Length: 404
Ligand SMILES: *Cc1c(COP(=O)(O)O)cnc(C)c1O
Image (tube, rainbow, N blue to C red; front, side):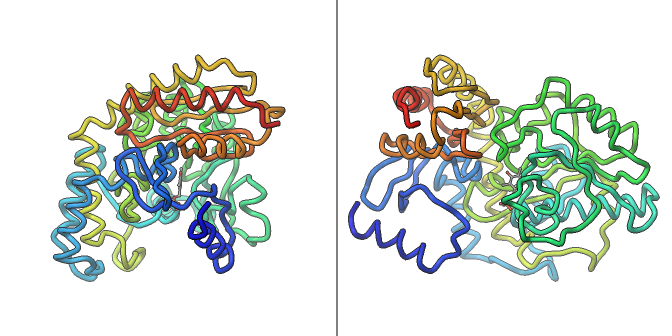
């Protein structure tokens, strides 16, 4: 490593809160599926900023929309109208079949906004006694890092010493419809769940789970809130992961790829009822729905559709999964995936996934471990067959090494 690389890393460590433990690479440029470090080494990005860069790094059309809008108008606050918000609403509603949209910035803010909205719906529409609303969530969930959200996490690291936490959440196992049925009470306003648990290690529920969940929520007048911040916008090979079971959520949360990685943009999408309960002054965000965010998101959605990225995710995801399944290595415990949301879970004896990610880095692939034993693989949705095969060769030679 040159001294400049050591400098960036050491300086971060000296001044920064150490709430991350990054792989030892300092990136300075990106284009499509590739990123380059400060020394000019090229890597295939198999994390895509946790799926925020689905459209590929620095997509030229999103970049052009961003620069054009930044020259014209960036922020008005919602105290005034702007000429991008209505177009963003219209386009995202048409694309996702939603009736109402609430624009926010980070994913966690979209989750918090959904929690507030379904509670309000519970009191004002469903008739739950004030202060009694319950929201059901799943064990091993990941919905962000704000206080209400970490309060219903089951990961000790996420929660420890951050309390006291907000009440009103009930935790059930993921993928277990009978547990949902048992947990619902007359005060249940919503079931908040990821279609596929991403941070937990790409955990795919049993077939038929969401069909049953949809039925239970409808039968009990409970809002089904799908956190599609990671699974949405093509990642799993469909525009929304809910489409794999042909269901429709009452509330859908989007973020990450909603801006193609240029800018934090998130949104709560809902039927008329849930977001319809919000009145002026009851919720807001200085940056939410600003013209720059709207212009970026409109371009990010447009290229996703126009350039066939959703279909490509399905096609290349199937190729990638097949290729991973063909790797004969006794380090591998299980390979999972849907679309380009993939994971390789290692046997405990194989050593930490982190070591494999570091070995992959030396071969030109950036991937991220999660939960000690799992390597997650989520390249930009613009990846080609040749690039998938290139990655598979390097994964195969790395996974047959022994780092225990
Ligand atoms: C990343 C993520 C979030 C949080 O998004 P931030 O923008 O980091 O706040 C919420 N839910 C899911 C499923 C995510 O993957």
